[in-house]
Amino acid sequence: MKKSQENIFDDIYEIVKLVPAGRVTSYGAIAKYLGLGAARMVGWAMNASHGLPDVPAHRVVNRIGLLTGKHHFGGNRMQELLESEGVKVEKDQVVNFKAIFWNPSEELL
Image (cartoon, rainbow, N blue to C red; front, side, top):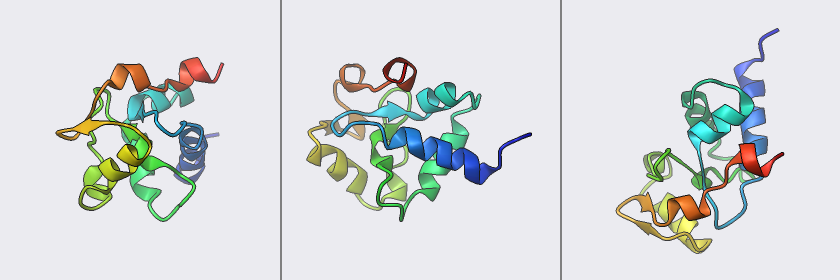
């Protein structure tokens, strides 16, 4: 039986809640961990998560560290949230992306 989109979003949110402050993950890494096949579903979930204060959507970026979802936060809010956690961002890209990348497939063994 296929899961509903709402249930898939809940699964995605549970993974995002595990990303530690000061670290980032990617849409694709979450999709791969959950066996979704496409990162797009994770992006839709992050967009739908605004208003859910316990889902740190700002910690989810694209596969090379770009803040591709920043327009959903308004202004520079995504960057401000990351920087408040010690993540350096320059020109909408996470600095030292590989060093602070949190991969659920490795972290959640």
